[in-house]
Length: 267
Image 1 (spheres, rainbow, N blue to C red):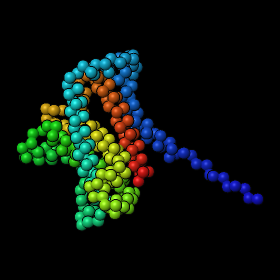
Image 2 (tube, rainbow, N blue to C red; image 1 turned 90 degrees about the vertical axis):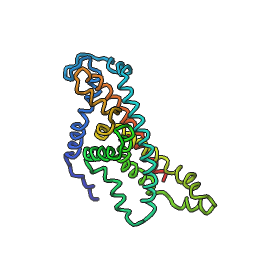
Image 3 (tube, helix red, strand yellow; image 1 turned 180 degrees about the vertical axis):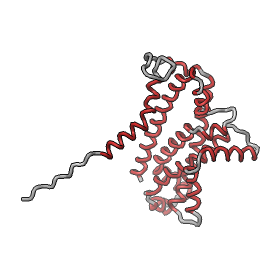
Image 4 (cartoon, rainbow, N blue to C red; image 1 turned 180 degrees about the horizontal axis):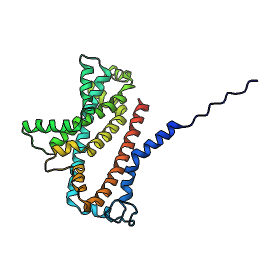
């Protein structure tokens, strides 16, 4: 009877590299919430003590609250517009073969590879030449341009395994095109829509370069944080605010990933 072959011993270099890479990448991020509880204003060890006063002071800053409201408005509108456009674009890319399809899809994905500073400066020149002053409206237009590739990618994954025979069955039963889309298509791709809304909202909420160029005198929250971080006395409040934003972003992305996977399973 032959002996079972032993697997050769391998030192987990790849695992060690992956762990080291994650530590290098995320350790500075983990220091952000740690120092937000520091009783001193200097970001250095040893910490002076534990305090929650920096978090308590956030609610009394009117400029901060206005910047937060601006970011919420921009993020919500951007998510709705980008997801709506991405829904119909993804359906066309998955279902149909038409002339210029690859070119148009490449143009949609182009913002992912263009440097943000180039996009921001170009849009500023374009909007000023069209008579549009920097405002939340121009920020929304810029953010839709940047968030659209994410929406299209997520919605394409939702449509990839969609059974087209379900729509054909609805047509055979006398349902209209709009009715089929509303009663058959939308419920099935709904998890993908939710995932797209969450991801595009997060992309817009965290975006800084476009908002810096296009917001004018209506700063979004990242622009406000940048204006405050230059002053040492404002740094503890900024760390507290950044910690809350970090937690919110992680929760949104985890929720979006849950709905994206649910969309793939339901399809």
